[in-house]
Amino acid sequence: MSKTIFFTPGPSQLYPTVTKHIKLALKENIPSLSHRSSKYSAIQQEVCKNLRILLNIPDDYLMFVGGSATFFMEKIGQNLIEKNSFHFVNGAFSKKFMQICSKLGKNAQNFTVEEGKGFGIDKICIPQESELLAFTATETSTGVQLPQNFIYEIAKQNPKKLIALDVVSAIPYYQLDYKYIDAMFFSVQKGFGLPSGLGIAFCSPRAIEKSRSILDKGVSIGSYYGFPEVAKDAQNFQTPETPNVLDMYLLNKVIQDILAKGLDQIIQETESKAKSIYNFFEQSPNFKIFVNNQYYRSQTVIVIDYDKSKVLIDKLSKKGLILGTGYGNKKDSQFRIANFPAISKEKINLLLKEISQN
Ligand SMILES: *Cc1c(COP(=O)(O)O)cnc(C)c1O
Image (cartoon, rainbow, N blue to C red; front, side, top):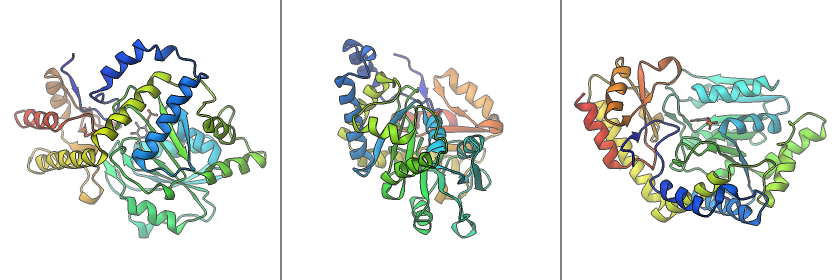
């Protein structure tokens, strides 16, 4: 077993039980299983059931399976926006969602704040014509986490508009009342600690209605992944294309492990680890926490300003501790620490000790 520990925010450290589950999956020939078999459908059904339990997703929302979170940004853009969307942009991933919609020919408007900042609710003017509002729960590039109440408030003020939420690096930690959300999506290589190459979305009945109405107007909703069609597949726990069968199997196992451990326990551990990390950097004069306002600090992705980050990252990697680099143009002036459930308190303590001795 490799001693390397990945604190990178995606792909990240594998959940501790994944090795065992992969071995069992190979023994059971899971990767060769036909995605049209009842055995596969049973896996998809269980993933759906267990995610509903874990995240408290309403029973009438349908689960869609795809290749990644980016895949679902595009599918949401095609299926849920006829002309106008509105994006809350505070970093690279929220911006990417907007750009994808724009490249699809939609009028993707936005409210953009400086990186590392949250959104003040009073300053936002959402155009009447916006059909969909897009949020990113945890902006993995900057370490900003949106307060749930902020999303609820905007949703309540805009009851006719659909709400799309990228929950990639926020869940399973981030709990939400999904009745306010019409489309949530994530990929599995971050908070769930799984191999990359699988995305999941849940869509509300009115999201699927919206897609149907766009189609009925003769506007394109793409080719093989139109939500009205995919909804029929989803009801039978099927997919339009061949999914990542192995990853679906592993996701099911890891969700069961998380449920067995208890989500409350995971939330508590996440907050306790995040507190140690933030306290440590608050007391270290050489480092600066990128997100100034505590209220917006992510519990799952911590971003630190440090002008010698490249040296530190190299040094720690020689000891088997892999930090995330800064994102984009912050590559050499920041580093990022993923605080996902796969990473234990002991590992976080070890990392902080090494950083303090640097
Ligand atoms: C990583 C990430 C994505 C992209 O995920 P892919 O699996 O590469 O498509 C999207 N949004 C957020 C917030 C992310 O952290």
